[in-house]
Length: 467
Image (cartoon, rainbow, N blue to C red; front, top):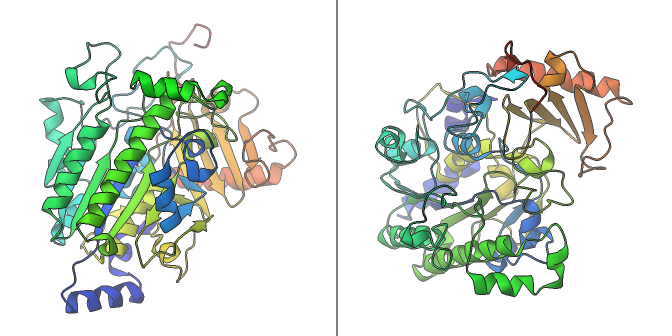
């Protein structure tokens, strides 16, 4: 954890020198394009070794930039991760620890805390800082940080209240309501093409000004739907029989990848490629009920690796070494300070930022120190079956603490894994490595106190069998 003023004002000398030279020669500050996928797991991106899902444009980003192999989402569900991206804070500090509006059932052994169900407008966001530093800002696509998804109540906390000059909010198709015409599977069910076209329009209009654009997709979130002919093409692939592969998801990913290609094409056509940083990320892992996340365990909702380890690729032509791979632990909380460093943006504030700038990793110089990452999920996730838990990764080891077992006096409170030897988290080392458990348990305990993390409590009204 570091103070935001330290992050912003304590930028590297190299960073200040680079941008000072640029501005002296009247060159524009770099543009930032953040492409955010929804529920996309590491095993579903081609450059991470899949041979079924086709992502040539994302793969090309990795060939021309840097791929991170230990990148994490700050949560295993969307809203908390998105809040961490725009604020640089752990979801536990924000008390935004579940998707909005979350699971409000109180029929479980534990009662969840009274958590924050929208991003308050007094939280300083990356959009506000960049806007103050002369950037034109836009958020196109999924937001999921307002009190409700749709107007009128959503307007109180939409992106225009958080530093974004322009915004266009989209929603996934509903399982419970009739599909709108533009959400038909044969057209643009998850608004990928609409989001892309709006984003391209913003890029073309702002090519002569520094801009920050978030392209926030709804895909590959369920409900799973796409064009029938494209699905049939993937069904014909013999690998479809494997439980990791899903032809509908493959078709959805194919459209997502085409969107990335369209964005890159307009950047090149607008002749701003040398001055544009493209970041591709996902808000959490994929649902393993739809497609197993092999070799990772579980998926969305879970604090196992399949739920929180995500693809991250960053390209900046001429600045980031092409076809480079980085194994350092990084997180969605790191985007805020990193973008500040990349853009040499400043802001006077004493607000706390939990993230660490990965600028030295991207530039291949300077030092980067990251020993630990933390997660807190004091909820029940109905979609995945995840129960309340918290976790810490320190170096090669990861500890998961289960709140039910801890609060109800049960066994097996802790699970310990060596992620280097056992990335699939199949061998619980808690019994044979009690000293490591105690060490990580203390780290986790201290962190929860430091961020004022919320925990569930025993439900006094619970009398039924666990549901």
